[in-house]
Length: 207
Image (cartoon, rainbow, N blue to C red; front, side, top):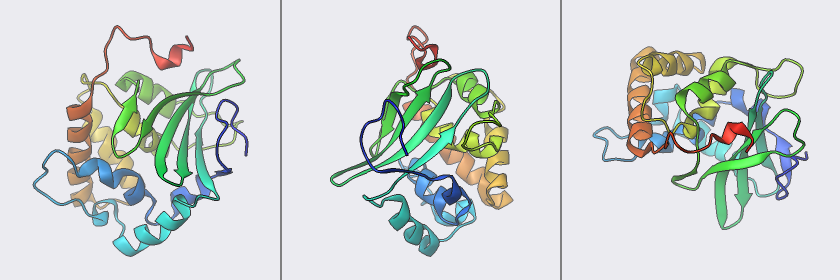
């Protein structure tokens, strides 16, 4: 697979992995564990278990195959999530794609902590809720929302953020009683590290 604008790594389509048990633990659990939380995050919050998460991590972190998750949007910028499985430099890279532009632009990365421009709540929801049905990638709006969640750097989250997140977690199989706990920890993490400056140019502007 080739992503123009991202010239490193043996990229492979990763969308099929989203349905595998253990994916969301690998993708989101680390966001639940900082900031001195009283409860220890566990895979069961996402309806998964540690064995499945460990087994899938071998696939997600394969240096020979870097999974790519495409989030194309209709009539606007989309996003691409890439597991950067470079030995000694593992992480997740986040790119945006712009209509009419041939190359994607990297806007953020996760290397045990978040760095980059990120998205506002409004921008994140717009991409999540505008799937393109003619481009390859993830079309389910709940899955799109969860894939983009680490990009949220907006301290002014809508009051509906918790309900939206809990509903998305329910779609991936999180039990009702633990979906609320996971959502609480995820939003607490995002709020603590949110630093979106309204004077910054949006990474979706293409400028």
